[in-house]
Image (cartoon, rainbow, N blue to C red; front, side, top):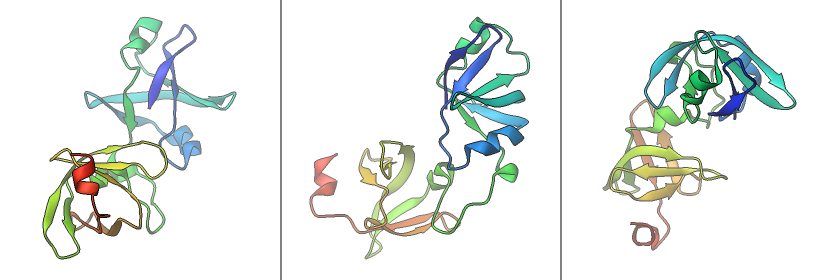
Length: 158
Protein backbone atom coordinates (compact mmCIF):
# COMPACT_ATOMS: atom_id res chain seq x y z
CA UNK A 1 0.00 0.00 0.00
CA UNK A 2 1.37 3.40 -0.95
CA UNK A 3 1.14 5.65 2.08
CA UNK A 4 2.66 9.07 1.40
CA UNK A 5 5.17 10.94 -0.67
CA UNK A 6 8.89 10.98 0.02
CA UNK A 7 11.31 13.55 -1.33
CA UNK A 8 10.68 15.94 -4.18
CA UNK A 9 10.86 13.64 -7.21
CA UNK A 10 7.56 11.77 -7.12
CA UNK A 11 8.61 8.94 -4.80
CA UNK A 12 6.20 7.17 -2.46
CA UNK A 13 6.63 5.14 0.71
CA UNK A 14 5.01 1.70 0.61
CA UNK A 15 3.85 -0.54 3.43
CA UNK A 16 4.20 -4.19 2.38
CA UNK A 17 1.06 -6.32 2.58
CA UNK A 18 2.87 -9.48 1.48
CA UNK A 19 5.26 -11.69 3.34
CA UNK A 20 8.06 -11.11 0.82
CA UNK A 21 8.70 -7.36 0.51
CA UNK A 22 12.20 -8.00 -0.90
CA UNK A 23 10.39 -9.08 -4.08
CA UNK A 24 9.52 -5.41 -4.66
CA UNK A 25 12.95 -4.99 -6.27
CA UNK A 26 11.89 -7.31 -9.11
CA UNK A 27 8.72 -5.40 -9.99
CA UNK A 28 8.54 -3.58 -13.30
CA UNK A 29 4.83 -3.44 -14.21
CA UNK A 30 2.07 -3.19 -11.61
CA UNK A 31 -1.53 -2.07 -11.23
CA UNK A 32 -2.53 0.63 -8.78
CA UNK A 33 -5.86 0.10 -7.01
CA UNK A 34 -8.13 2.29 -6.29
CA UNK A 35 -8.55 2.90 -9.98
CA UNK A 36 -6.77 -0.17 -11.38
CA UNK A 37 -4.49 1.83 -13.63
CA UNK A 38 -1.28 0.20 -14.90
CA UNK A 39 2.02 1.73 -13.79
CA UNK A 40 5.62 1.16 -14.77
CA UNK A 41 7.99 0.87 -11.83
CA UNK A 42 11.10 2.93 -12.44
CA UNK A 43 12.83 1.86 -9.23
CA UNK A 44 12.22 0.41 -5.78
CA UNK A 45 14.61 0.50 -2.86
CA UNK A 46 14.68 0.10 0.88
CA UNK A 47 15.48 3.25 2.84
CA UNK A 48 15.73 3.01 6.63
CA UNK A 49 13.40 0.02 6.73
CA UNK A 50 10.79 1.56 4.39
CA UNK A 51 10.20 0.64 0.75
CA UNK A 52 10.33 3.56 -1.66
CA UNK A 53 8.63 3.36 -5.08
CA UNK A 54 9.34 5.59 -8.06
CA UNK A 55 6.94 5.23 -11.00
CA UNK A 56 7.71 6.35 -14.55
CA UNK A 57 5.97 9.64 -15.29
CA UNK A 58 5.41 10.49 -11.62
CA UNK A 59 8.04 13.15 -11.12
CA UNK A 60 6.67 15.68 -8.63
CA UNK A 61 5.19 15.71 -5.15
CA UNK A 62 1.82 16.69 -6.67
CA UNK A 63 1.92 13.70 -9.05
CA UNK A 64 2.78 11.36 -6.19
CA UNK A 65 0.12 12.71 -3.83
CA UNK A 66 -2.57 11.42 -6.22
CA UNK A 67 -1.27 7.86 -5.68
CA UNK A 68 -1.19 7.94 -1.87
CA UNK A 69 -3.52 5.25 -0.52
CA UNK A 70 -3.38 3.12 -3.67
CA UNK A 71 -2.62 -0.57 -3.38
CA UNK A 72 0.17 -1.90 -5.60
CA UNK A 73 -0.85 -5.17 -7.25
CA UNK A 74 1.24 -7.45 -9.41
CA UNK A 75 -0.21 -9.02 -12.58
CA UNK A 76 -1.58 -12.48 -11.75
CA UNK A 77 0.89 -14.24 -14.06
CA UNK A 78 3.82 -12.62 -12.20
CA UNK A 79 2.73 -13.33 -8.64
CA UNK A 80 5.08 -15.32 -6.46
CA UNK A 81 3.92 -18.75 -5.43
CA UNK A 82 2.65 -19.17 -1.89
CA UNK A 83 3.23 -21.99 0.54
CA UNK A 84 0.30 -24.32 1.22
CA UNK A 85 -2.31 -22.72 3.45
CA UNK A 86 -1.54 -19.13 2.40
CA UNK A 87 -3.73 -17.13 0.02
CA UNK A 88 -3.70 -13.87 -1.85
CA UNK A 89 -6.48 -11.59 -0.62
CA UNK A 90 -7.62 -11.04 -4.20
CA UNK A 91 -8.15 -14.81 -4.63
CA UNK A 92 -10.60 -14.81 -1.73
CA UNK A 93 -12.79 -12.03 -3.15
CA UNK A 94 -15.84 -13.55 -4.81
CA UNK A 95 -15.63 -16.89 -2.99
CA UNK A 96 -18.92 -18.32 -1.78
CA UNK A 97 -18.97 -18.86 1.97
CA UNK A 98 -20.99 -21.77 3.33
CA UNK A 99 -21.34 -23.36 6.74
CA UNK A 100 -20.33 -26.97 7.45
CA UNK A 101 -23.79 -28.16 6.39
CA UNK A 102 -23.43 -26.40 3.02
CA UNK A 103 -25.89 -23.58 3.80
CA UNK A 104 -24.93 -20.28 2.14
CA UNK A 105 -23.55 -17.59 4.45
CA UNK A 106 -22.63 -15.06 1.74
CA UNK A 107 -19.98 -14.11 -0.77
CA UNK A 108 -16.62 -12.50 0.05
CA UNK A 109 -16.81 -8.84 -1.03
CA UNK A 110 -13.58 -7.61 0.56
CA UNK A 111 -10.69 -8.53 2.82
CA UNK A 112 -10.04 -6.17 5.73
CA UNK A 113 -6.56 -6.12 7.19
CA UNK A 114 -7.47 -5.63 10.82
CA UNK A 115 -4.29 -6.99 12.31
CA UNK A 116 -3.95 -10.60 13.27
CA UNK A 117 -5.64 -12.82 10.73
CA UNK A 118 -7.74 -10.13 9.03
CA UNK A 119 -11.46 -10.19 8.28
CA UNK A 120 -13.54 -11.48 5.40
CA UNK A 121 -16.28 -8.95 4.63
CA UNK A 122 -19.26 -10.64 3.04
CA UNK A 123 -21.67 -9.01 0.62
CA UNK A 124 -24.22 -9.03 3.47
CA UNK A 125 -21.93 -6.93 5.66
CA UNK A 126 -21.06 -9.85 7.92
CA UNK A 127 -17.43 -9.80 9.10
CA UNK A 128 -15.74 -13.17 9.63
CA UNK A 129 -12.28 -13.53 11.15
CA UNK A 130 -10.00 -15.22 8.62
CA UNK A 131 -8.77 -17.72 11.19
CA UNK A 132 -8.13 -21.44 10.64
CA UNK A 133 -10.46 -22.31 13.53
CA UNK A 134 -13.34 -20.55 11.72
CA UNK A 135 -12.46 -20.87 8.01
CA UNK A 136 -12.06 -24.63 8.07
CA UNK A 137 -11.87 -25.26 4.30
CA UNK A 138 -10.49 -22.68 1.88
CA UNK A 139 -10.49 -23.43 -1.83
CA UNK A 140 -10.15 -20.31 -4.00
CA UNK A 141 -9.81 -22.48 -7.13
CA UNK A 142 -13.37 -23.71 -6.51
CA UNK A 143 -14.50 -20.31 -5.22
CA UNK A 144 -15.56 -21.77 -1.87
CA UNK A 145 -14.83 -21.22 1.81
CA UNK A 146 -16.41 -23.44 4.46
CA UNK A 147 -16.81 -21.82 7.87
CA UNK A 148 -17.58 -23.00 11.37
CA UNK A 149 -19.00 -19.81 12.87
CA UNK A 150 -18.84 -19.43 16.63
CA UNK A 151 -22.27 -19.09 18.21
CA UNK A 152 -23.51 -15.50 18.06
CA UNK A 153 -20.93 -14.23 15.54
CA UNK A 154 -23.50 -13.77 12.79
CA UNK A 155 -25.66 -11.65 15.11
CA UNK A 156 -22.75 -9.71 16.61
CA UNK A 157 -21.56 -7.79 13.59
CA UNK A 158 -24.47 -7.48 11.17
